[in-house]
Image (cartoon, rainbow, N blue to C red; front, side, top):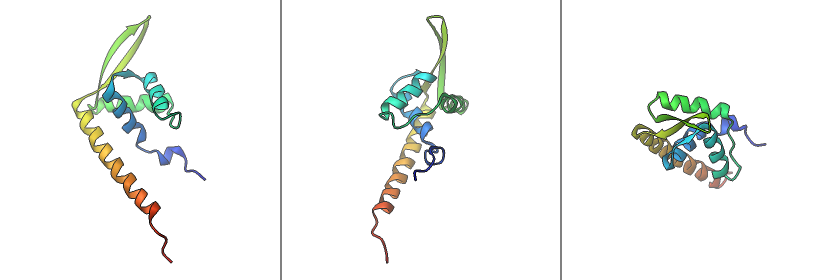
Length: 112
């Protein structure tokens, strides 16, 4: 039985949002689609997950925003700040360490 994505993937949306925004600025729905595409449809996060995260990251100073009107629609574009890059570096290092540790445990021989 697979764990629920809400517990198993805790912290992953933030890591992915910061990573994707390092490449280029995007608006919320565009990020939802970019995560889905970058993960080969393995990871999907609803707008109800992504938008609150974007707002929190902006409040924390990890993201900057700019508003632009395109075809009569106003969109908020997000980009990573220097503080956001530092946050991503820390999260990324922690994630790599954690996954390496988990892989070690999974590959360890069983003890009698």
